[in-house]
Length: 126
Image (cartoon, rainbow, N blue to C red; front, side, top):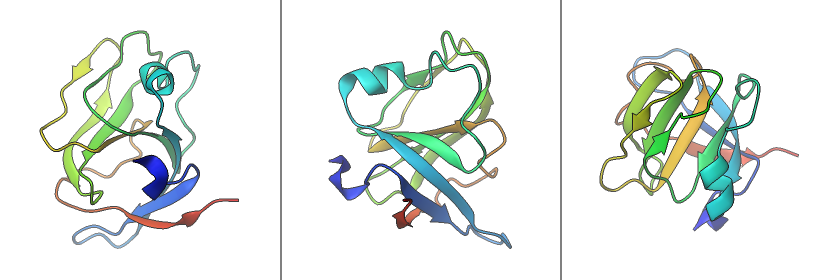
């Protein structure tokens, strides 16, 4: 399934009424173990402009995390189904039905209120 979203892809959304486009370079976690580990074991969140895309996505936890993260669940068209901002360590976040991928970024990276917006693939970083 992740063949449609290559590792290193740049995904972007302009958003309703927003002046700027949000671009995120994603690392794709498309194997059981990489999805299980996710961002665990890292001392700091992904740098601004980057994130982890779990494919297939689903519910996530922040048990053992050392920092808060933003979480967005996406359907197969990369439309945002749900969003949680600045989720602190030690929490569970449920994914809604129809979730295809889950995007994790550092806290404050995803704009607020992007539910219903769609990301698009802009290209692949070298």
